[in-house]
Image (cartoon, rainbow, N blue to C red; front, top):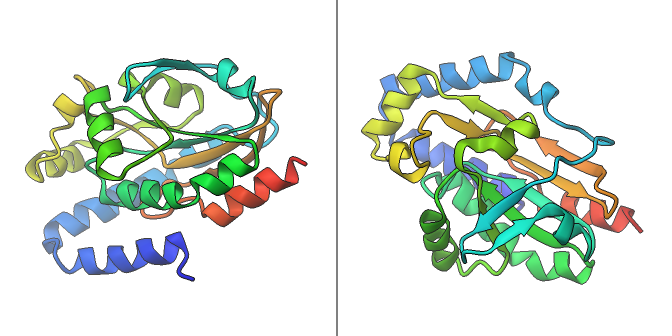
Length: 216
């Protein structure tokens, strides 16, 4: 069975052939600078208390982490937005494992800085049955140590590609989260964490399920 990251790598390699060399160079340089910044090492890790949040879902509800934890552990995944094809692949794959996550008594929620309307479109497109939450301004991502600002040249590339982050992120076009997934136990403690500066790499569903199994 193909893993999520194998699928992402195949997509990445095909995508690279379609992107002009000068744009690839900007993307690669920005990615290397973000990796060198040490941001992933500063993000919250295993053993930390998960910062509490209340965020609006694509369906218009306000969901609080404390309320979610009252029912069991939470799998919290941060993604960049519906405009990111790697995020789309990752969320679609998580949907395929959603039943296995809920069978373990856990709740899956996905968080991005985009407005609820964009999240709703994404949820409908992929028939997502888990909650997709809007972290406008990336305040929650900042609490988890995940938020960073795009450099000027990469922001200009994203504009040229038509991602329209000014609109979809409601006036916060430069700030995005690192891709990250946390397994949080009912006490609010992070028991498993995946954080990577490389947006083409994501948490494997099999690892998430193993982390839930380890909670006992």
